[in-house]
Length: 89
Image (cartoon, one colour):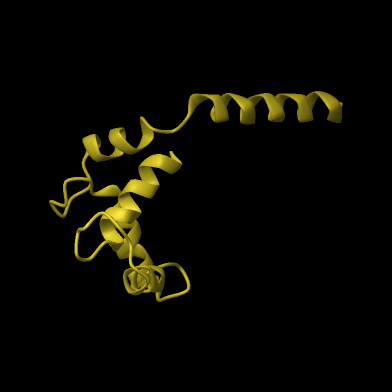
């Protein structure tokens, strides 16, 4: 998922759409992160999920995001939980 999220952040922060983040764009983008108001944070997260920027988060938008979640990490978390539960007994 980091690759997809990185691409989305680049797209959202890259104001001049040249494929690079200049320092000013990076700073402006970071200002949208959680240290800002809740409303600004919600807007950023919403924009991350709204892949086609139609103002709606569709099933396809969610599917796109979660199709990039590495299955290996999910399985590793389940394994750790199982091992932790076994050791607790």
